[in-house]
Length: 530
Image (cartoon, rainbow, N blue to C red):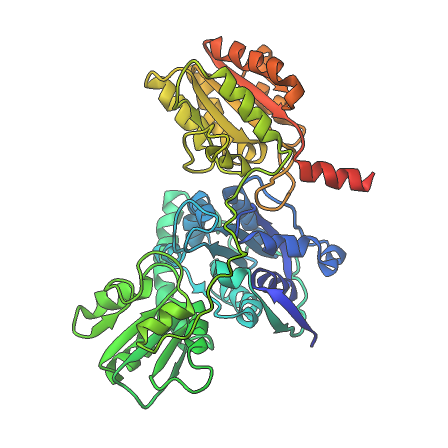
């Protein structure tokens, strides 16, 4: 079959398409965004009319995937690790409703927080929900795994997670395609109560889910992605999970690793295979990208009878990404010579683009607030979070999607005046509407600044779900029409915009100021098409 050079994200997308995918749902978030984008521009997906538009948020996306599964079709939902927190409610409950058509939950974790608010290991969600997790070690496995994931999902009637991390998601390698499977035919669940979680049903479904665990463990024991390779030097055994297996191999490019290796890419953890390694070796080194899930579990099973090395004892740093160099150090191999950074290479801190409308909005807002001192502006997640940095220094917080409005409401309750929230249009659609409803019901004294740049800019210019609807949404939620103000964030309107902010700060209720001007990249793209 045809060979393709693909990112890890793209390999999962192509693998799902070739495995009979009918619909993909998700919300953009680095490092997962390219999964849906690949399918959106894929000619085969267009020809088959695969559902491939963005959802308003991750919870909605997973529920939409459950809906297409209800019709017997195969679905995949994508998100980054913090997006799984948003989707946790349907994810946990989907373990009990199960799947009709196969469901893959593709999650891309971001160790070292290259573009995230925290480090988080999504394998723990799989363990929490008692659902299988597949973790590719390379791009070919990323391509192959959706086929197995759909098979397991439909065999046992449960969702299956595929977990990626940043380096695999955003690195490119050749993959070989295999035969394309047809999409499933429409068929509703044979059990009309399958997706009904009234307590009387849910209790029975939980018992059924628990009864599946032994079979899911057997699947992991027999998985082609969990392999044991013996070695002559049994003073140390190595457990390498997912991408960590690649990092291990990079340190033995010129020879075979002398130690026994257990490669784990299919969870739950294969206890029998682990037992084989443990019984053969005096010491165990556990390599895993993210948090010490395998290490904690093995320590819990065995206590401290064996000498176990990993993140918990400091052999591998607890925080940050794994790397070939860290693995090499843990293996106690001599350091390799490393080239220094050339003097010509300079650090380039992130900044708002030249001509960004957010810069002019912040200038006007700071001018309107100059008499109130610092600490009044709650921000959200998007390009505009860069307003914290010089030269703007215009915002004070960034916690999670939608928190700007919620925190402004709480701060106003605590006596802060003025309390300002700054949120992007896409983030408003994702998580901002519900706290705005709280503000309206409570009659909070807050000003909500919606930065409407007509796109989801930070993650690559995806469409915003609320484009052209922001005023109507705010009015429908209950904001008084006369206090929904629209400004054009340009330098020449600075005085006018400052006056608008001052007027709404003075109003003792909920105000919404919509700073509307397209992202310069959206403007350039539209201008290029005209």
